[in-house]
Image 1: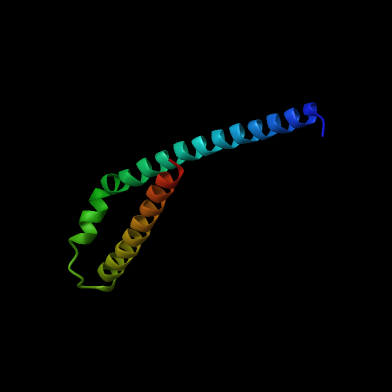
Image 2: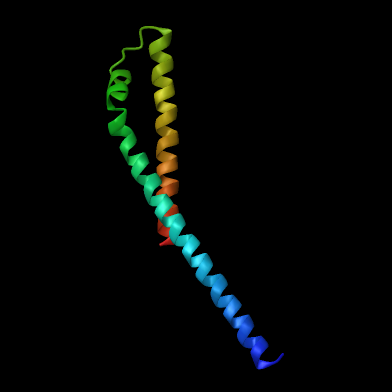
Length: 91
């Protein structure tokens, strides 16, 4: 391979790495926004969470609401942990 071919190949590698670095930076920005959105959920829905937390399960609705909130809490915590871990891996 001629030196010009080697240089062209190295330039292509450098361009590819720069493009991928930019994409990773974009992913980090997106993850940061997702984490902020997740962090706002407890505040945004504080009234509904407090209402359900205050239920005495006297009927089917209250029990179902508490079960659903527990499920959503588990999903929320798992997603938040996944986003934080992804941010740490990409940083």
